[in-house]
Image 1: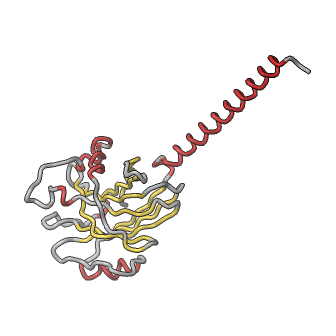
Image 2: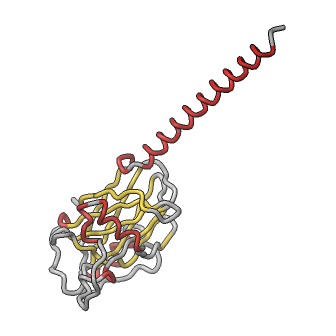
Image 3: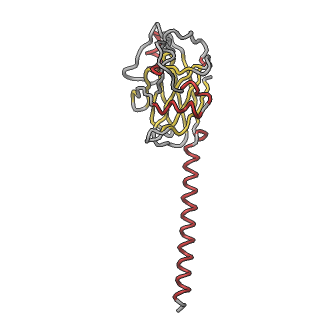
Length: 212
């Protein structure tokens, strides 16, 4: 039999190698997870429509909206978006913010409601979303601002349509340009901010998606 000291050194060496291998595997998994969470790993396409007020309900229904769709408003121009995305499933949600690129910084367009595979999604806004302005120049218009009687410039105009961050999903979302906004005739003046929010409510990233 070998000496106890030699056996002990062999056991310690084996444990060290095992720990190093496990650490390498954990690091590789972490890097893989981080790559999966990257906005570059998610492919997003968007289609925007500018229906007349009496066309909103029928067009939304044609794209899969079933119950509770809100009709058009003759005094407030509607924008209907249909988004599709593919990529690794993420924990948490995706939030869709629509921006009017005709002004600088781009103005947030107020969401009305959304519809995905689970039904109506509603709308939301969290103060943490305003921190997007600190991280992305193209979202500078989301920064906090003083209250105003002008509904186009107050935080009340802010909003996002949320949906589950599934691997392959779709969303139909209805927005209104805002009373007093200049009429929009070209959807390419719009920009979608496709944002990932983790289960703790922390913003992970925002991806700009141009509207063709």
